[in-house]
Image (cartoon, rainbow, N blue to C red; front, side):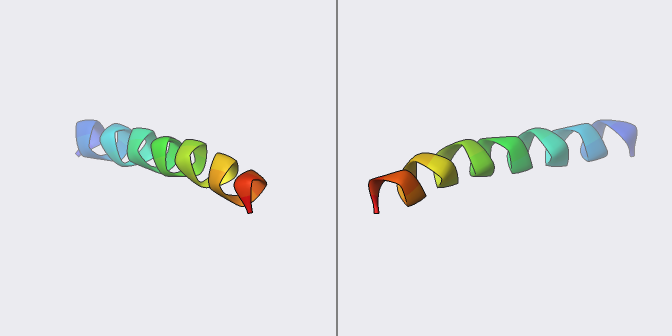
Amino acid sequence: MRRFDTLFSQLQQKQQGAFVPFVTLC
């Protein structure tokens, strides 16, 4: 379960990293 939690955290960070430039572009 710990590994899944870490994976989810990394996924969230990736989404934020892709979302920030998108907002800046707009």
